[in-house]
Image (cartoon, rainbow, N blue to C red; front, side, top):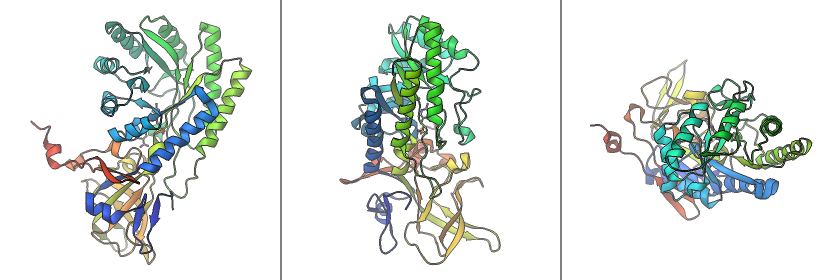
Length: 431
Ligand code: LLP
């Protein structure tokens, strides 16, 4: 199986985190998001341990809340000792409601309004990450109005291209994110930030992409960033205390994806950092990373019921489920691959189906070309694996379908983390 939390009973019934899907579907209905709490904690601990081993006191892990943001998830991240990378007031509000310590929140964003900045300042977030020149001015203005000296990082675009989906590539010089090194805008930003009285420049941030499998992308980032640190010292007599390398480690969506040895990769990044700092005679900065996907993806699964099976002889066959691009837009957006399993039986004759949803457009494909039992029929349960990242968080009400609930599974049992939306919820904002 793709991940150890997916198993089959002797009778063919699928279990996730030890729980039979049929029973969960009967209790909570479908479509249904499941999250394996043990796996979430293991993934958090894997990062915290690797950082502790490699950087000791000088390492911090932030959970990138954009991957899956709801109160119980953020509470869990806090319990496991992670800080939070938040990108909106909505994520910050969720964190505060979960009791997340505001000083452990890093507030990112590339298009913040004055109201956003004010809300962040009022919440007492630990660090703002400034993304562009207007934002620096805005942060200075609002911090001055609030009578605060706000700690900030500058987001730098290191000019590194990763081999991932175009929509999630962020390190290249023409990115909408960050101050590019290449054009001199990063230098200007450092100079400005150092001169602004209500901002305290504590370090640099960068993030080069997501679902990244390139072997040495973080090492190359370390090369660029340490060389830049040396240049900043020479030019401005300033050195960052914090170096945030962003998120991005890839996860396994299908058997074809290699398992990523994240602790091994972090050890290589640490080794490269120590080497470069030694060569350039730089003090070791405190190192941060902001994983999202690799914390939550394989802790998630989506369960659907089949609404109908449409066979067009000589052409295609479709399995139409009671969800779709509303709860998982990732195939429609990125052509993202997923592993799809029949949740009730295996073996026997198989056929190839398009797994599609019930939104009113042809692009509503959850996954093309999936092998399922040839006799798949209405009422059967279908599981899509590894949906913990960027599924719930990107879900929409397209066609006014209510969004599914999120159920956490743990040794203590199953419990709701987010209840199912109702048609009344969807209607509630109409005036
Ligand atoms: N830090 C920053 C500044 C980011 O922009 C991101 C992701 C992360 C950390 C977390 O990266 P991760 O470890 O999750 O790869 N919706 C897309 C993914 C967008 C990622 C955006 N930024 C998807 O469904 O694949």
